Image 1: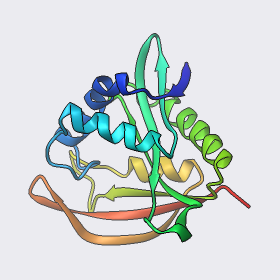
Image 2 (image 1 turned 90 degrees about the vertical axis):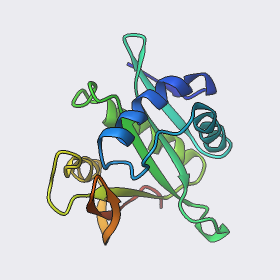
Image 3 (image 1 turned 90 degrees about the horizontal axis):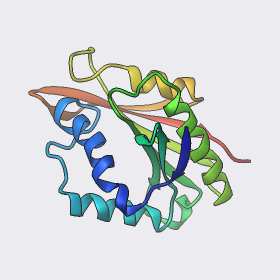
Image 4 (image 1 turned 180 degrees about the horizontal axis):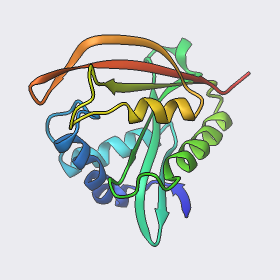
Length: 170
């Protein structure tokens, strides 16, 4: 298992991983899979300021995690939002934990002290969304700090959104 910084050349594999979540789940509230050029731009934009990590095992990228702007004001510069996506066949193997631990390490180096995760939350679990993301984040030390009700509409049903927080700095 190797964790490294993402490169623009990884975009096709990362988009393959992400595309599954867009098309088959309510984990992402996007309706359409982004075009490869847009996805490359997203990676480049993130890498300009934040870590964007991939995890490889057996010569294949199994998942990725990255940080981004929490709120676009200078006062929030020590906070960021984090996201993680694992290949649908690579869950339950410790990749998520390893990615998030490395991401936290890299974020501390650049002065980040608060992490926030915006997570789709089912009103009741269904075939498109479970509470697995919330439970994963709890396991990683995040605390639920807010909930927005029926703010995401996908697959002809409403979903909530929660914010989870982890304080990693002093």
